[in-house]
Image (tube, rainbow, N blue to C red; front, side):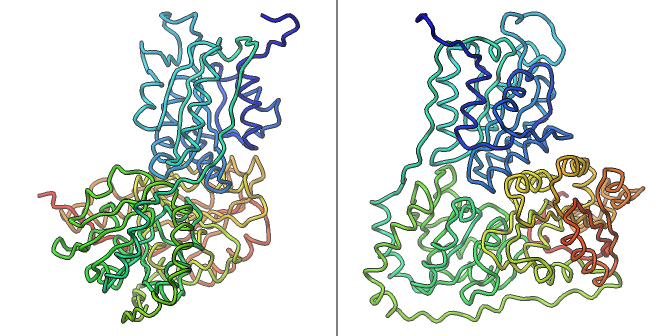
Length: 553
């Protein structure tokens, strides 16, 4: 050791590195094994948002990462605190969100002793459990190993294929004094697929019926402007996957609506008639291509995706993979397009009119579809809507009119109920001046609705809309259609979401008509407090999810 060298703890270096990375908020639930690191984060100026359930804290960190583009951070104590974070980690992986999950661990010096909330290989090995749910997971066994492992984890989380990482920090490692800890902050660099990009234009020029399918990757890369330029320069129609909803404004003349589950037949028809798909940030999951007939797979597929896992493996199409960052690749492509604009504009393609709407259902009670169709008119242009999973989510995919590209967030892929509640809270912490709205269902709300109290205690005025049809609607309708049974889908004692919200400190409204909902939503914006609007809808309304059914006989 050099004379005069200052010794600092691993927890000091961790907190300082997070602050230098631009992290302002961390989310989690404190416990003995994570105390040293959590308290140091507070000492270094990071605001700690204590959650009510670890999974929601993980979702909040994902919402923060999505809103800021920076690293999100969620932590939990050892044992069950860590296992409760696993769902949020898998959700972040499915959505390519850069989140650092930190869990505690008993002291290395005490390994082999049975302990409460054990995270070692003797009971619940968190480092091993997080491995398939993240891009990197490791137990830090010594203080002098921390810098190397932290640098590696962060370079992966913020790298070209963004996603979650996990570090398991033993108590004594967090408090270990280390003389030197060299943290390297990653610098973003363009990642483009130049060779394959040069093959894009010829394929488009040869195509008679090209189609752009925009997925949620457009939102993750903030490539909305690039999508618009590509579509307008080449005069190509655009449809969106369920998770890609909002990649383009609802009323753009080249937008032909969402496809797949929650989509419109018009968009599915375009998929079945196209000879070239230009897929931007979509895995082409079953939720997107459920109505594509095998005989109508396009001859060619251009797929922009940083993750090669499913590229070229889903459709019987000759596939050109454009790897790397979507926004960087699109900008490179557009730079070449400008030189050929006159030639490309001369290509005449007959496009169908973008008339993708369906009539609203006629019901005896309030229709959720009708509420969603007019809801964006009551909200300011600068708002973000987080939509939870369930039938209400697919109603929103079909009916909500997105005006600001990138303002609609919905995960139809991993699809974990309750994720939007935490994500909305994390997003509000990151952007306190923006209107943040969450649509969730009564089933989701029963799972993680206590996070309303997290928002109240931390003065994060999110507007929560709880769709209450007194049942697990999507499961009920799907089971009823395929089996004629509805086992386990009805709530024998329905919840009163408004009373529950009030007990957690929120302002609450109940709405059974359009007029009541409009008044409540307008008042919620004026109050600037955490508000819950319980929306009582017709339980017989059929969700737009019937495309995806199973034969269980």
